[in-house]
Length: 356
Image (spheres, rainbow, N blue to C red):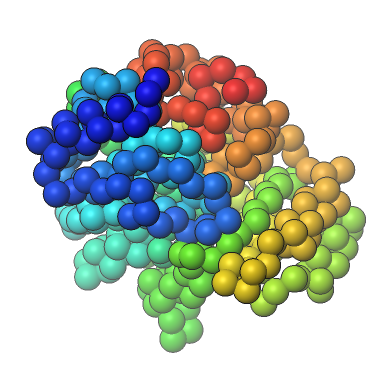
């Protein structure tokens, strides 16, 4: 593939169909400045029809694709490897039906957007822990959050989704489950639920550099607690941290085969985040070493697999374990609906083939 000629052809097609939403490299930003980025074209879509047109233009020229919500994938999958990025960050509209307690959410909306839209009706949505992260991305991978014990993962509250396939066609996928629930609480002390999520936005600031590791633990053994405390006492920066999410309650009562999420037993999710300012010239080696060191210390007592939303770019050996019994079924579905791997690549959480 001659990417230079191909890019010109795709860009002409996009300008004709999508207009002023087409951008050249340099227009894209991601949360993690340490992530490799080689975006060839960026298309900032404003509605579903523009997404469909962008997909068709790319597929017509056999140009690979990536999709970005709010850009918080720490590996930078939405910006890598000479792909055209379909950027949904301008599509943040959220509407809430207070009767059915269902929110309709565009692909670029953040968790905070959904929470703020639900709040006037006395409702709260099941989201992840960080308000600035897009709700679609965290939902597709699971979505651990404060309400998980009561209402399950964000994924478990998905009712249906409109999906643009690799030929630009639009289909509706019917999901299931709880929809929006009544608030488990409206305030924590003097803090609203939205404000509580906002406190964690400092953990995902655009432009900083991040090194992330993750583990699943069946319980908090003495060895694990000792390792966590030791790592906490040797954090390489004030913005580095260890985040523990206890998965129990509603989410454990859902069959593993009913969704893509691979671990429905009680467990602890450990997120290890090394964070540094790239403007200091630091190469991040100490932060990566710290995160990997804690991950290695936890390995003897860890459950096989890791949280799919936090998998590293080269963690191919973890993919099947991350999705559990669903991995084979998901690959079959990917071959059916994306046989050419238009939305795949080295950094895809679920490539078409194992180890690639």
